[in-house]
Structure formats: C-alpha cells, structure tokens
Image: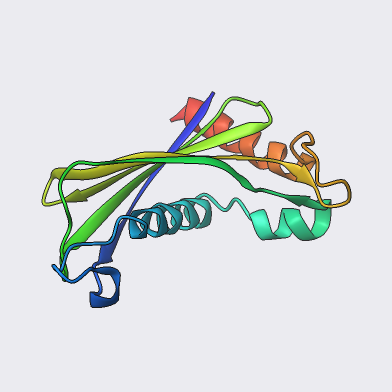
Length: 142
C-alpha cells in the first residue's frame, strides 16, 4: 500500500462564506480538491497526461466530510491531504482542514479508473502504475 502526504494553505475568501461569515459546507470539498491537486503536483502524478495518452478518466465515486468547527472569513487554513493506493481499481484521498493546529473538518474522496471509450471501470493505466511503483520504491528506501 502506498501513502503520500502533502500540506498546503488556503486563505478563506469572502465569497466562500455565508451571511454569518462562516465557510459554506460545500466549499470544504473545494479545499479537498485543492489538496488533491497540490499532492499530485508535488509527487509528479500527471493525471491529465494519463487521460490524454491512455484514454482513461478518474471520476469521483464518493465523498464524505465531517464538520467539527467552522472556519471563517480570512482564516488561514492548512489542508493535509493523504493519497492512499493499494493497487486496486479505487484510490482514496483523505483530507483534514486545520486552523492553528485545530481540526475543523475531515473527510475523504474516492476515485476509480474508467475507460473513455466504454465509460466503464478499467484497470489502472500503465503510466499510472509505473509512477506509483516508482514512488512506492522511493518511500521504502527513505
């Protein structure tokens, strides 16, 4: 099993809040996505290239969030994202949104591989498994 972690920061914008100045609940999924994108960028996992060259998509199959404490306008948030992959057709991103060391929200998204032609589940593309295997080997030698 491969686990990769990344941290990035987000400043809460006014447009992301409700009338009370509290982050609207759906925006946490945007924060989760930002964390996913930054993690993939950090570890050089080029999903867009796999889509172009290997004719696959990576749809979301489910998502979950548990809201503990509200974030507010102008808060500086840290998004901790963990990529978890066990070699199956599904991979997972766990996310935590933290302010000043306090957990505000946690959740996950799960994704799969589908063929662009059939729009049905398919095995991971070779380019993806090559990158994952390289990262797994690096992690075991650290």
